[in-house]
Amino acid sequence: MVGERVLGRFTLEERIGAGGFGTVYRGWDERLERPVAVKVLEADGGAGRRVVREAQAAARLNHPGIVTLYELGEGAGHAYLVSELVEGETLHELTRDGALSDRDAAEIGAELCDALGHAHSHGVIHRDIKPQNVIVRDPHAPQSPHAKLMDFGTASLIDGPALTATGEVIGTIAYMAPEQAEGAPAGPPVDVYALALTLYEALAGEHPFARSTPAAAARAIGGQAPPLAELRPDLPAKLCELIDCCLAREPEHRPHLDDLHDCLERAAPALSDEGALPQPAREERRLSAPSPRAVSTARIGVVVALSALVAWLGLAGGLPGAALVVALLALPLPLIFPAPAQWVAPALAPLLGGAGLAPVYPALSAIAGTPVRRALLAAFGSAWLIAAEAILGTRLLLGVPDRAPDGWEHSVADAASGVLLPMLAPESVLITLLWAGSALALGALIRGRMIALELLGVLVWVAAVVAVHEALAGTAHAPPAALITVVLSGVALAALWARTARLGRPPPLP
Image (cartoon, rainbow, N blue to C red; front, side, top):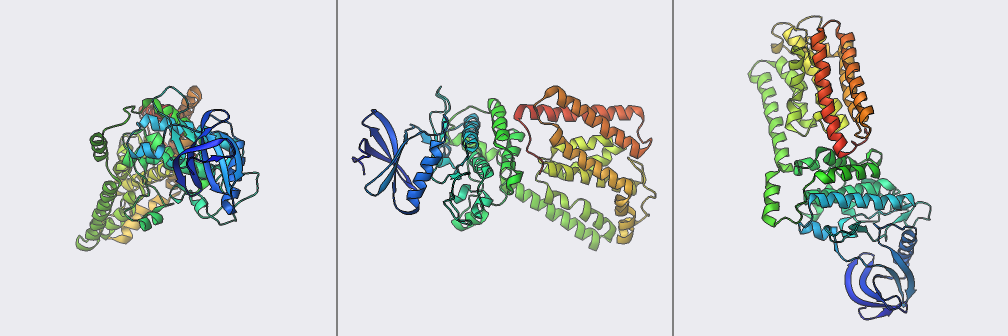
């Protein structure tokens, strides 16, 4: 259709794009003498209804981060959407060419959060956020915003009639939230998921569900993406955690757009602004970061080694009791936690207990990235502490009624009754719940917003944890040890707060 005039005033000059919902041309408005973008679709059937829906959706929106719609019309069996022409490249092209810095990606992400927030506030769900639908002007130019969201051809109106039947899937599968892929009604969380996946790809340099074959990729989509920090350990941990949380399978577990916007905005100034890196430099940075395959291989290696140790203890070594304890207290760690530091962290609990500083451990469990993992890491620390008390016959926090029988490592029954059963004692259960609850409370308490109030909350948290320990443990702690506990816990939590204050709020508790 190049060279044709449509709707009596728009001359189509050049074909600049095409997709499942139409062909886009660069055009010239003869009346107002300005360049425009013209999307051309067949007027019959579902495409015709969708072009009207796109016009209805775009007409509600007036935001600098959303491509402006100028006119809608029909003629010669076609429907035409005439909109603002934005000169630039798509986010897909920039990511593919390595032409964005980390700071550019964060700033563009914050701008897209603003644009989507405006759309959602006007009852419009985009449903097809992907790098190809984000047009980016020169990210180093002074105009703002740099990114604009386009193509509302699959948008849904919250208060409008549905164009798709229940169970019908519409959108781009590679960026589609699980509930959208299943045909469920789409709400704001589907756009949060797709935007987070788009940012993940921009920052990591690859789609997390990319596989060697289309069939393998299709099976991977909607599953658990590798943590962003595994591909980019140099990025701020809080930014990685929040993007990971936005990719939660359950929509109610995903953070709000405001949380993602604030985190991106806070993180951007500290990110690299190197811009387009030459290919060798990008490859060097990529090779220097541990790959998900390397991390997975390490986990498999540790699991195999621990399994071999359990088998040797139980069979060749004649120590079935010790095999049982290792299997229950050590083997699950690399299966649950992604980072090597978390696999050995529970061993710190009995070591701190030996110094009279056991209440410090719940604060140290903050090394786990998500609230649930913090709680589990704290619970494992409690289990290791109680088992160490039974094995050593030494009071590290609570003490046990009796030391484990001599030779417990040779007997499964003695190991179960002497080492593991004390974990079910009422005071042991209380400590485990206290530690897990304290670790969970960290994410709710420390939000990085109100400095004075949150520092006061940290002090109250530390004091409360120590007080409960003192009540449960009796006189286990001399006053100097309790004071050291308060100081060390406060320092650990203050460091966590400082990092959170720089990088934005953590994701909500699952």
